[in-house]
Image 1 (cartoon, rainbow, N blue to C red):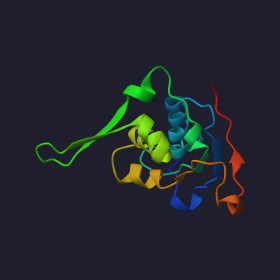
Image 2: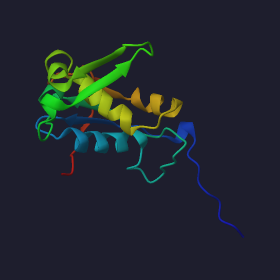
Image 3: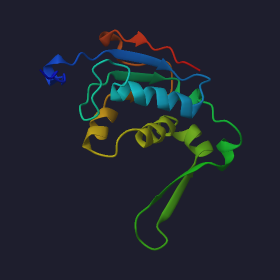
Length: 146
């Protein structure tokens, strides 16, 4: 007799809300741990093709740390596809204008590049300060392992 493989159904998925404080956290380490929670890799019923991850609230995104000389040298590039259409944003400029974007770019790069990854990314909320409007969801504090 063969054993059946358990497949989580949509109604069986129990999503929790987590709050992560990004103050004095290294960008890559923080993003990789948050991406694992968004994918649901911390759960026993993890399935790669099912979105069974949790919701994550990230606060204090403006106080993230980049190691080395990355604030001055690291940049985000995009192109319009036309000749001369390459534009770039340095991370030092992003830190002053839109600090949430730094974490958004890092998290999008660590999630699957398909509709499932887009659905997972919709479960993260990023705020530059320490205030957030999600207190009604009663989020638990997520402790980051260094």
